[in-house]
Length: 285
Image 1 (cartoon, helix red, strand yellow):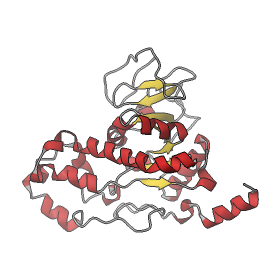
Image 2 (image 1 turned 180 degrees about the vertical axis):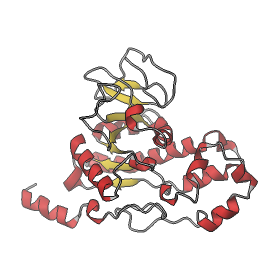
Image 3 (image 1 turned 90 degrees about the horizontal axis):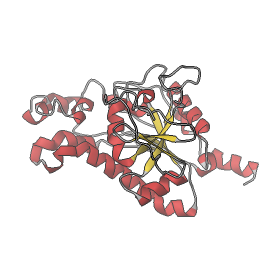
Image 4 (image 1 turned 180 degrees about the horizontal axis):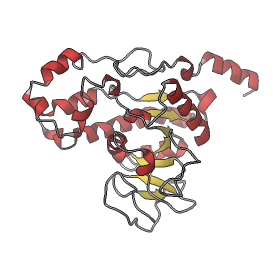
């Protein structure tokens, strides 16, 4: 593709960052790639006032989904990840809907958890969480085809800046962004549990001394651990969730101690040893 053709294509597909508005914590979250603002008739301030008096809502106080369903912070909804697509081959066009469906299904399974067999109102909190899931998909072949981690991080950081998010994020969606490249896409199609996505820490600073010298602000996450990762981001920055790893390998968040892989997704043969404390430094290799 010539430079002039590329410029023309980009002009027809403007950068969504150009339309970003400062985050309003009193409104539902919105991203410019969405054609309409999200709304849920059962997640209004009036509805919450009624829910708080209901036994099914009170009984869910200790369940993970419950802490996101609060009228005090509507900006937490809809919830989900910001996902960059960096593969645009003909094969990927056919596989892309399968990948998105598997991501959504894994998140739904994570949310429902032990409540998957519940009936009537006892699982209503989890059902509302499933209904309020909406990922942001950043997809433009002229801009993001084979994009590098630094390119994506730079774009994501600029997005956070325009939202006026300059400190530690108070919304899990803004803790990191996910990346689906060709290896990630194929891994998800081949394995609906342990396929992986890339995770880029938008708050990574190469000048900061982290607990692990190996930390570079990038890891992978297994499909089966996506919901766990989202919950962790409500409390912990990515640098506390990423396992330590040997040179030449990629750290992988799996909802437990973590593991490491090579570029093709093959796991390191040595098992991880580390603290059992969840969410804090997933151990050493």
